[in-house]
Image: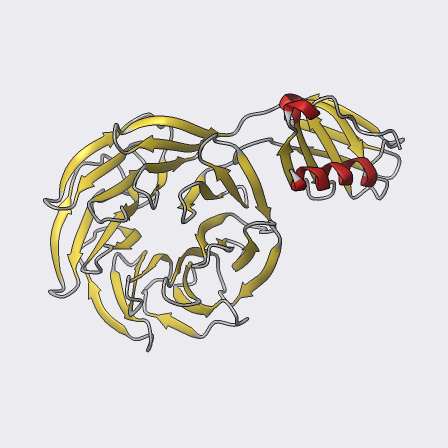
Length: 401
């Protein structure tokens, strides 16, 4: 309620009606013009405007973070499917997102070569990490410290400390460039990565030295994941070009051997992720399905259908209650007892009712149907904040001055 009051005060005091002409062309487009400038940009309420690349649940399982090709990260509320906040600032596609161990900050990795740190509660940008020479494809948190590791299309991995500005170690070894995916072992001693060179590489996290190379894939390795007990690694492969295989491989770390190859997908397998208890492995594919594998006998358990486009990533909730899966249209939430799709988090438009420009011509506010208020930056089109007015407050209006 306090947050609502603060934002209402901002809208009523900080923004007033302007002599500028404001025209609503379509529900998803706001055209703002005056004698000094003209802007035509789409303003999309709720949902990503491009494919969702990665998902992360908050530790309490009540919220979900998503990264996207639309250059943003979004925070969602699980119980009602509402978008709470958008983290905007990257100038390239955001390929990965992670939550710090204390649950207070968000890390995002982008094709703009940077990693950004955000305040989860306020949405404020805290700092930017630079060091990669090409886009950052993946990042993973060390669950036992302030460190995180990134993989990049420059072919390297970098180890970072959240409290330091520069990377503390660089891992080199992926031949031909393009490190696609990276993960920390549960005990933080090892790092695994997959790349265009078709190899799964195991690294010593302390020395940055390569420990072992698992070979066997016939296409680039797009995803790697440690089992929760730290004994096995799952990897998946595929290619944009001539697809030679669409499989998942399970490797044992101690024996340095392949335990099994999982067949079932009909196209490139984009990602794999373990459930918190290690009982299941979820795989996402260009064949538009999500497959659930039982890890006790490494067999196919369920195939989740309903996505109309490629599925990119899945995440299990910490409570073991939900599975979230992402595609180029949005996110689906599945109940893990029934394995039924119970909610969709997708882009949809809400018609504006009234638009108010701030006198500084840098921001404007929009009152939408369903009692939703948003504030935007004019130059970038970035949404600053969004909330739903309580029903008893629905007759509030913007002041004229």
